[in-house]
Image (cartoon, protein in one colour):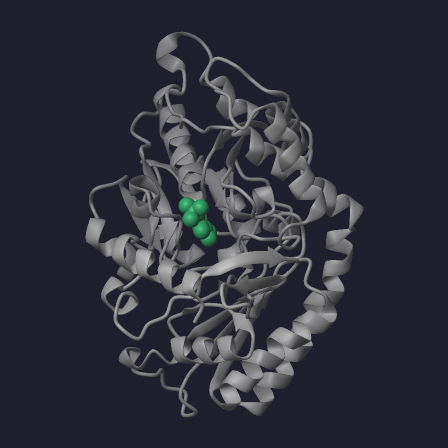
Length: 425
Ligand SMILES: *Cc1c(COP(=O)(O)O)cnc(C)c1O
């Protein structure tokens, strides 16, 4: 092992604290964390010079590949001007352009205002607070609760976490956040009164952290209809699904749904920098006009960060120049063929769930029973895949394959083949 690698590993194990990680195992003697030092296209290199395909788009963020010349140049050019200036009291050119471009994806007079923040969680946090304050300022203060879906995931800050339905992540802090009612299907919505509900929050088309479970087709449009009938706002969490992952720019476009609030983050900057956006309608925005007491008192130091906006605009340009979405449909079909063929070879593959370019491969015992959770079979498979040059993470025993949109057909084959070999092993 190289001297640098050893030094980085030691400093990490002595001083870093990783997300969602059992630190005792991470720091245990014998565990050698990968030190990723470089990326180019869909490939990553570790400090030992080994090369891997970025099989989960660097935790669901990267779209056009790493070190993309156009995105790098855009960031570099902005860096020469200013890395960050305050959005509180000032504006800057790139934020104005980005806000306009984002609204341009939706019909006129629908989503027409953009509130910037930093991450998926803060985009949600902001949507929740807007939804509640809107009710306070439009004569319905009793509507201060939310409906969320069981097994949903919307982030880890307290408000966003109160929506979360994945027990192992959110149970501990239950009761500390917003009042939330969890439902598991549309039918559940009519089992109680919605009079005290401000909004419904959902991950459209597919729940990510819930082991990649797609919703039935048409469900989103039906939910929109229910919201309209009941005077409830619809908040879409497109933090994962946004920016092409499902095959269209936004998942909601597949069912012609326009939400009242739309949360974007992960892919917004092409996966280069933390930046998030909460989009809303003129109607909601208008309720915040008037005196100081009506303003939206919310914000973060790095709101609308200039480098993030530069990356986001460059990413949107890449979509146009490289015709990313046009090429994507063939890749989605190719991935689907590859995974279907692999499933037929391995009885341990219980189900392949795919929504656009997002795939979850659920592993179970051949008799259909789940593996005992202590076996951590999914982790073992991902570790084996790493030896074949593919980096990804499982969610329980579901292997996530969420390749950057820029992945070429032969690179898709490489990823599927690495998984195949891992399973064979
Ligand atoms: C990742 C994710 C979030 C949280 O975003 P962060 O940037 O990690 O705070 C929220 N919702 C969904 C659907 C996500 O996948």
